[in-house]
Image (cartoon, rainbow over all chains, first blue to last red; front, side, top):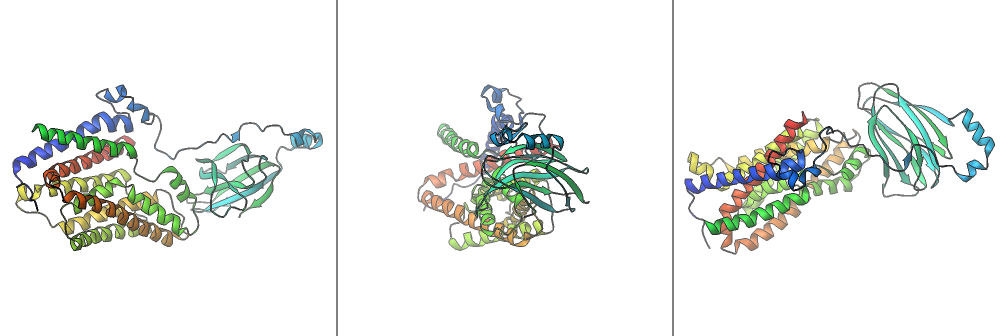
Length: 199
Length: 231
């Protein structure tokens, strides 16, 4: 078996200097430009690495994922057009259902609606003040694997929009209250759904 | 010297490749994060998997382990040192999550990066050469294990795990970490085993530990920059 070369101060110093130099170069021309947009040499920009860095005004807060399914206006569906009376009634009283949901301090809960694929859920909700972390998601009916699709995830004190559901199943919100006091959500909805409520 | 440089350049290539593949955001990826923050039930197997994945893809933990076992040849020694590391990180992972000890993720990762630098320097014989004696390696691996565990605990807590079933989910994560560590070690030891049969292992011993230090320094620089730019 071979043996190690006898260590000496000289090789130690050389090794340390080399490792520091190497780390410095890697940090300077690759890591800092790509991760933090810090590019003193300009090489990161020249190599196109800085495009990877998050823009400077963005904060390292949880990412807000918006989904194309959440649209500003609902698509006009055939059955709505064939039911002008229903449409008129809906115009008068824009919301079909309204509910107050209490989220106790340091607790999270879900509120769900059952919708058939292609149906829309229009909604608006706001809290009595504090922002809540929420995950607006759907679970396909009959699924046992725990799969779900997230439509929007953010921390806000209100949200509104229209969701055309991509599959039949339960759709709704998970809210988490990380504050020390109870938060009340006022949720108003409209659409062709069945209320599941708290699962 | 020329040949030496050539060898180094080869290693730099490998090093860059490894780091570029994974990026530097060694946390939990967004899908996993999503699962963690919406999980309110017992989910042993998913947590097991997340723990294992975290370790298998956790190059900071793996670089440290590589440094620890680099000069260990006997199975018994490897077992002792890896057990000490496991004891250290499990202790702080469980206590950290249980008592909600939150540390700054950048700072704790900076300490983990320092552990890699320390071990590389130790393997280069730095302590013996400079101070005439080497600090107890078993105690060092245990203490650094404690810091690695705080790192794991901090990552797991980032996702505000629900109170219900915290214990069982946390334990599953911990067991997953050990499974992942075992799998990663199996690969590392197999490769080291092959390499040790060749003279290049000894020729490269110095270079390898120099690069280990470099890796640690890059991680340290990354974490500290992250810490100071995040404020």
